[in-house]
Length: 437
Ligand code: LLP
Image (tube, rainbow, N blue to C red; front, side, top):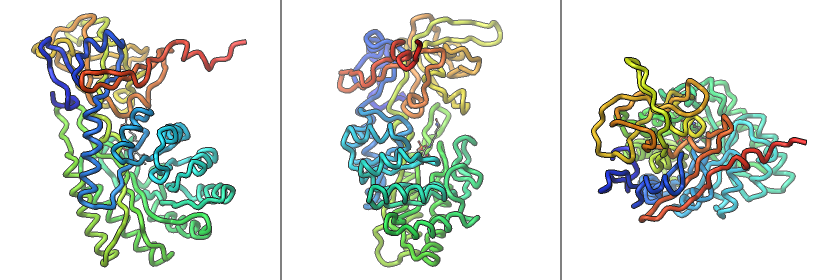
C-alpha cells in the first residue's frame, strides 16, 4: 500500500479501505469524484514534522503553507498540532480567524499583497508580514500607522539558488518574481527603508522559499549559507540582529512508486545541522534564533486519496486504451500544468493482477486532460472505482469549474466513521454569482 495513507488496507472484499471505511461504500454514500482524507494520517504527519524540527532546535516553528489546501477542517487539525500558518489571502486569513488560530503564529505572504489584505491581517492581530518587494514597505508602514500597530517584518530574499525542480516551481532563482535579490543590493536597500519606519516596522528576520518538489537537501544548505552571509552584512550595514529565519517549504513527496521519498528526519537533520553551524559562526554565544519552516505539500499531500468512477473505456487498437473517469483537470490540474505524474489502483479490485497498460483520462473538454498517461491495471469496466493516492496538496485549492462542472465533495475518515467536511458543489452553487436580468 505504498503511497496510500497509513490506515489504508485491502479488506476481505478485495476493496480499498481507509480509516476503517470501505471506499466502495463511501462512493455509494457520497458519490464521486470524492476526496478522502485519512485523519489519523494527517494528525500523525503534522506531529512527526513538528517533532523532527523541535527535537533538534527547540525554538522551531512549523507554519503550514495553507495554499496547499485549507479549509476549517484542516485548520483545526493543524491548530491542534500546534502549527502556525503561512497565508496569502483574505480567504485563508478568514479561516484562521474562524478557528481561532493565534495571530502570533500567522505570517502574511504574497508578491502583491493588496491594501485590503494587509489591513485585514493587521486588524486581526497578525504580527508578522513577509516583505516581498520595495514597494510594499511604504504600503505596510502606512497601514500600520493608520491602525496604530507595530509589525514584525521579515525580508523575502531570492538567494539565486536553483532547486532543480519544474521551472514553474523554482522560486528562489535570480529571475524569480518572488523576493528581493541580494546581489543587486535590493535586499539591503529594503532593510534600510524598513529602519526608516522603525516606529511601526521592526525587521526581525529573513525568509527564502526556493521552490517546491525538492528532493535534495543541498539547495537548503546553500540557502542557509546565503541567508547567514546576508545576515552578517545586515548587522554590519544596518545594525539589525537576526531574530527569525524562515526557510520556506518545498520538501518533495513521491507521487509514484519510482520516485524516492525524502524522509523528514533527513531533511530536518540536514537543515538543522547547517543552521547550527551558521549560528555558531554568527552568534557564537548562545542564540535563541527562531527557526521557521513552511511546508505545504509534505504536511498534507499523502493524507488524501481521490476516488473516481470509470465511465467510457476506449481502446485505440495498437495505440492505447483510455479509461475515462468522472473527474480530471477540474479537480486536478497538476498533470496538465506541470506534467505531474500519479499512480492509480482499481479500488474495488485491489488484489487483481494487472493485465493492461492504460491511460486515465479526465472528463473535461481538453486533450491535455489526462490524469495518468500510463498505468498498469487489471481489466477495468464502467462502474469500477479508480483511486489515486497523494491527492491532498494543490488539487482541491487549484480546482476549477471548467465545463461548468461542480467541484468534488471532501470527506474525512477515521475509526470506521466518515463525515463530509466539504459538501459537493451543486449546479445551483455555480450559477449563484451570475446576474441575468
Ligand atoms: N512557502 C511559500 C512562500 C510558498 O510560496 C510555498 C509554495 C510554500 C511555502 C510551500 O511549498 P511546498 O512545501 O508545498 O512545496 N501548485 C504547485 C506548487 C506551488 C507551490 C507554491 N508555493 C504544485 O501543485 O506542485
